[in-house]
Every structure is written in C-alpha cells, then in structure tokens.
Length: 320
Image (cartoon, rainbow, N blue to C red; front, side, top):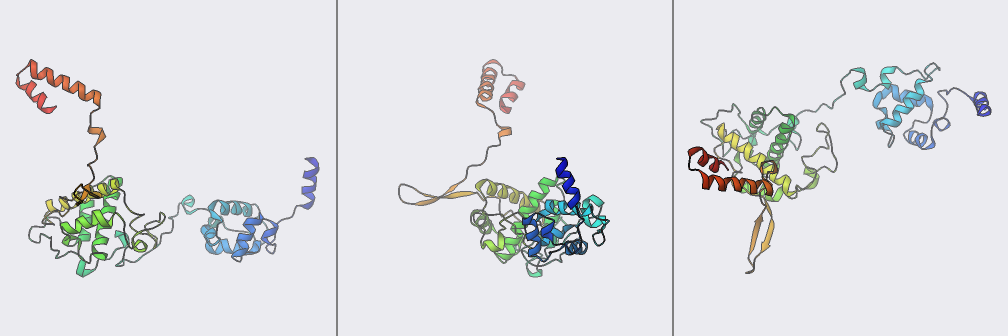
C-alpha cells in the first residue's frame, strides 16, 4: 500500500480544460458525454454553467446520481483555472431554497388537466340540456365552474384529488368523445361511459399514457390503461355523488348516473339468449360482522325476543 501511494503521488495531475473526458471518467460515462459533444473537461464545465443543475437531462442514461458524482468531483478542482463553477449551479433548487422551475402552459382546448383546460364556449354547459337555469344555487355558470364548486367542499387532499380525476375524465370525454357538454349527458351516455369507454379508453394515443407523467407535462393523459371492475365501481360511485351534489345545488335537473350499474360482460343462458352480468356491490368490510360475531348477535336477538317485551328491548332488536 505504501508503494502504491508513492506511485500515485508521482503520477497525480490536476484535470485541465483541454483534457478528454475519457482520461478522467469511467469509460461508459465518458462515452455518454462524448455522444452529446461533451468531449473535454472544459466543455463539461461550460455545459453545467449554461444549463445549471439539471444539465444531466441532456445526456442520455446519465441520471441525477451520476451527475451529482461528477459535480462533486469538479468541486475538488474549483481552484484550477477554467474549472470554477458557482456552487449554485451544482446545487439542487430545493436545497438552496429556490422554487423548482415549472413548465408554464397557456390554457388550451384539448385533452389536458383541468388547470390548463380552456373549455370551448359552445360546449361549456352554460345552456346544457340537463341544466336548471332557473334555480341554480351553485354560482357556477358552466360545467368547469361546477366542477370547481363541487371540489371546494373536500378539504382532504386525497379525496379531492380522486374526485377531481373522475370529474376531469368525464368532462374531457363528454366534450372530445361525445361532442356535448357534461351537463347534457343522459343515462345512455352515462351507461356508455362506465361500461364501454372505461373498459378500454380509445383511441389510446389520445387518452392513455404508458407511464406516470406529471400533470404539467404535455405527454400527460387522463388514463394509465383500461379500468378494472373495482376502479369502474369507484368511478361510478364518485360520479353518482358528483351529479347528485349538483342536483342538490340545483345546477342540474337530474342525476344521469343514479341508476347505472357496472357490468362484468355478458353471458348466454340455456335458451341461447345473451344477457349482461352486473358486478356485485362491494361489501364494506369495516361495516360487516364476522361469522362468530353474527352468531353472537343472533343469540342476543333470540334472548331479547323470548325474554322481554319492553320498549328498549324491542328497539335493540330492531337496531340489530
């Protein structure tokens, strides 16, 4: 070890701006840098200065971790002419208490998140077929405003996000797939949405993203793929509440989703007739009794039935 350390001291040399990256970095990393024109240490420093902390995004398959290692290595040679980089350029924005740059997008009429959506005037629902134009107590004048009105009551972030996603999907489908305002949807539209479109959102390129994409990115889509039976049941429950609350606020006249059921598919009976099969409602386990608990409850019920006719006993039996 002493001999190796002595040899190392003999060959040690500071990096220079004109040194090729192959002479200092792992071959794989150096080749990835070279592929995008960063062939020397000087060009590497220039790239970091010009782009900032996220410079690694310009180097395929480098990643943030690899970029941090390179930055830490350069920091060791900041006193070498031509290699000085301001600390701010090497520091993550969150670590220097600066806001992370966000993509600024102007509102557009397209399949985009609600916060970037410009609702078309002819399909905004201001005169939807299902609107209650005389007694509207919501203060909303179009369907997008009605969604915001509905979401305002939900302080829990997870609940609000879940409900927003369902209302968002329905609004976009109504406008871009059906060509009608959300407040003009009828029971047939509701049935088609739950039991056809959610089963397989098509065209996929328009509605589905293959990976999780931030809402601020242009590649964002409303779906990650077809919805399972459970997810369709959840969507239906949310939309029943959505329309029901808007009916209560007298923004809508009736709830188009009130009588909709989630169907598993179809089957053929013995006579050769095809019929649709509805999914069974999900049992809320937290409100259900185990077999043992139910047996005990029945024993108590039997005892009350045989042992007493007093009002409190009858009331207890009714509650059970």
